[in-house]
Image 1 (cartoon, rainbow, N blue to C red):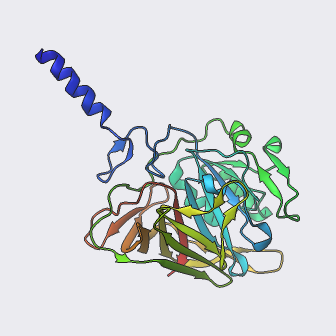
Image 2: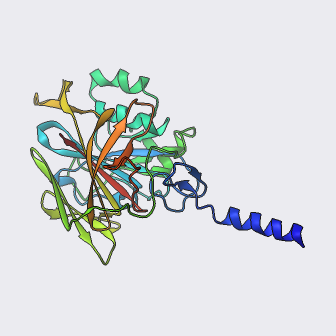
Length: 311
């Protein structure tokens, strides 16, 4: 009987392991390190997504585990969506990559990156980066032109087909996020706005939906295939946004957003705002977020949006 009891206790202990990345950083099986939700190990696909008015509403963005908002030329915004737990049938509109993406993506091991192209001077840098570049020329069967938006805002990618062109892309792994119950403190917050020179994001807490609803440039954000956009956790990460050595065809300088280093961040979860600090000592590692008490900041399970804003 004692042997049977011991076996039952072992099984109960194993059954209680939730998976993912818990508050203490231990590996938790069966959960996504990007969302804290149930997920099987799967490769990482990042997609560079257009975010101009002519490109909206986007497609497939609601299925992303993680969305980064970045500043580009002219003070406009562009999105980098990261998929692993769920792959929608289609994602887009797809646009060109930037130098900042290469530093940001290093923390994902060697992911696949779907994008429309890059300027010629950046191409060799992309080819040398630890990722699988998947522009249309590399994976032509993964892309098509849609009819909902005018060119060049009408290029779409099929994620499953794209990943077939990158069969060795890294599976999702710990990038520093921790999920769990909300920490003590926090300031009640119903709405938070982040402004770029020519763009803006507003996140409004929905108590019924238990998520932050996204608005872009003052308009509620929707997708063609999933309804309103929302996130369980929003991170406003303040960092250095400086000029790069690149510019667009109109001569506008391309910003470079630094994601290696440290600084302050505002984490929104469960209708509250938490003042935190972020740290990423090297490009090969993830980003840790800590509370003012020095404890690891925990995110609410679900999709995460990170808005990279100038300090």
